[in-house]
Length: 393
Image 1 (cartoon, rainbow, N blue to C red):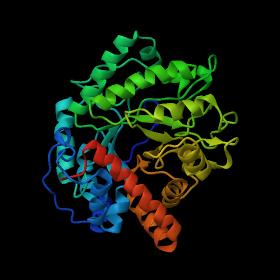
Image 2 (tube, rainbow, N blue to C red):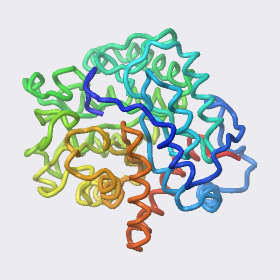
Image 3 (cartoon, rainbow, N blue to C red):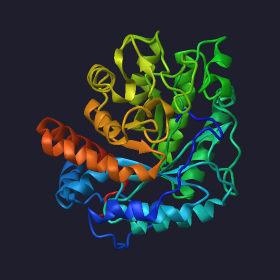
């Protein structure tokens, strides 16, 4: 997400609203399951291949429960108890929103409780753990991380050690998804004018080559610890001036389909770390002058999925509180993102989730083509969970 410290406005999860999600899906009663750090995929003797395991899980979920798997909802770090109702509701994941100095052991206990409460597949439990100004977790068990630009300046062995430590700390705290690293390339000399990335040294370099090396190291370390990395913010926020969290009509008029920054995302997305790709909410007139990237079939399907051949999880930037999407009704944001080819809808505001699910279900009932697109998104989301060990045996 492109927000710096204090930029994101968090809305506490309402137990009543979360119960709306749960009440229309599966039974909200807690189902015992292993704690997050010990979740594992099926043993090698399991005769089912991943797609078959996904098919079995899909068959065991009603339609609302399937659609709920496509949502990652924010939980304010100053109100972690509100995450319990969200975990029971059957959403696909929870995002730790804000900043916290809570000990890693305390977070691990909370994450384990949420996993126990989830009625279906295990949860993605995510945070923005980049470094510098964007480090969600700083309490005991978490080292202070330098900014991405400072990380990139480290000797390779030191960067590897730092990334391994960060990844191990996240895994030990029960997190399995990091909404990082930033893969945006900020042209040299423009850093101070690039509000979301360059101004805060969130970029790993000013050339695709320098960014690629450092980002690859961080992704590999995360994957090695069992934490799925996320490349952000496709097709790049390195050339914009304003922040999509706080400004409308954020535009990059230079980036084209053949841009080196776009090619960088494609190269990194093919990593064995199997990263997610986060799509920005800025507009790229050279790609699609009519739609923001996260809502654009041209950007998500035509470019990222077909031209760049990415078939993994595409997660949105915040579609809840971000000013860039405020003029689009919440339900329509979710529908248009999924119709564009997205997989996981991220909303910092969890109270929007029930209405977003309703909108997706209504559109699915009226539009068979969209319903098939949702089916594909559900399977893509659950296949990633199967690889992460989040499908219960």
